[in-house]
Each structure stands twice: as structure tokens, then as C-alpha cells.
Length: 258
Image (cartoon, rainbow, N blue to C red; front, side, top):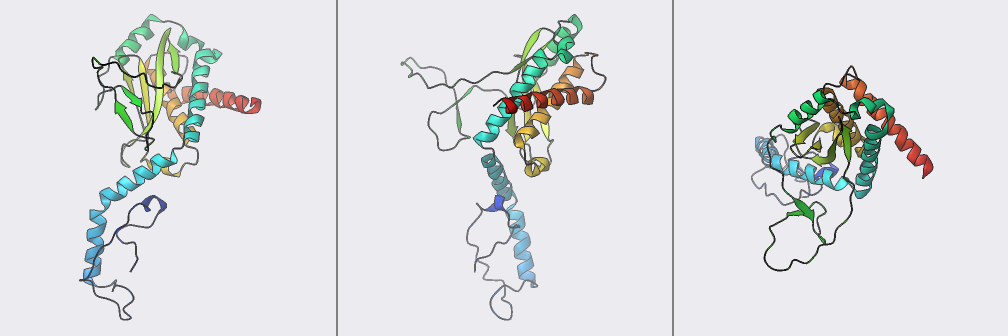
């Protein structure tokens, strides 16, 4: 008998398959199905639901990663480029770019925060791989001549705060369904890392993943701007909305042009 039990059928669960023998569970009166009112059946379902919890989580994670196509990544990178253009050129953020000793000290204080929960490692994409999410760690060079790797150019985005270039990047990561929707960390090398949570329910239902990332980038950068003590904006919401408004205007101009 083919039947999905132990989880609710859903496209994200399509990878879960296998055979389970429930010989101890009684049949119904016409011998075409299990007796779903029997104690044995209810006990089996409860056991399977508990046992498959981690497997269901892994299936959802894999499904969300696959949905993040190259088109979405390209669209996201365009959005973030426009964020950088706005913050580095727009008149509304001129005061932010102007060097101020107080803000310099605050940026230094922010970038000296301890990393939270993990270390940074240098990674590079493999030239050929079957898994688009597969990476390997750069190992120290040996004495043998190393074959040069194929490289690809990628823009390093930055914003200017008080005369200092602060690089920023965004990635989607798994923080669990109970985790926050987003996180950001400021590293010692003046790098802002912004993460959106794959597992957060809003990610699962949003139709525009790139804009979802843009909204998180705008909010996190606004938070950092407000932490510097710049009084140009009264609230973080005002700062975030200004970033989103000007960025979306640039995106629309780009679309009209091309």
C-alpha cells in the first residue's frame, strides 16, 4: 500500500520516501486500509511524526536552497548595487559620508565587536561541482607549484560612513524556524555581514526573495547608521524607508533603461 504517513504531504517533502512495515496494525473491515481508529495505528503515527521531525526539517532546508536560483541571486546583487549607489552618492546621505571624529570612534567601537558564534574562513568555489552550494576551504600552499584556478570577477560592495569604506554582503542562511528573520555582524576588517533566515516563515511565503533580502539589508544598515550617532535621521524607520525609497527608484530607472 502506497501512503504518506508521519508528515503532511507538501512539495518540500517530496524527497522523503521509503518503506515502513506496520504488520502489527490491524486492517479495516474491507481490508483496503489500516484501521485508523485502532490504538496501534495512532501509536504508529505518533512515533513516526516524532522520528521524522529532523528529516522534515532537512527536506525543507534543501527545498528552500534549490529555490534560490541564479536569477534570484543576480536580481539580489542588482538591488544591493543600487543600495551602495544610493548611500555613496545620494544627497540625503551626504552627512553620513562626511568624516566626523565622533562617528569614527563609534565605527571603530562597532567593528571591534567579538564575532558571535562562528569563525570566518576563506572559501572558494570549485571549478566543477554537482552541488551549487558546495564549497571548499583554502588550504595553505604546499611547496609544489599550484595550478592557477579559474576566477570570476565579483563586485565588492561598500558604503561610506564618516569617510571610511565599509564593505557589506548578504547571504541566506539557516537559523531555524524559531530563529530571527535576519542577523547582521560587523567584523574587524570593516565588513558588514547580513543574513536572512531561510527557515523563517516569511521567507517561505514571500514571492520576491530578492526584495526580501533588500528589505533586510536596508533595515540592518539603517540600524548601523543610527548606532553611529548621526542625527540626520530621527528614527531607524525613517532611515530605512529613505534607503528603500531611493534604491527602488534607481531600480525602476535601471529597468526602464534596459
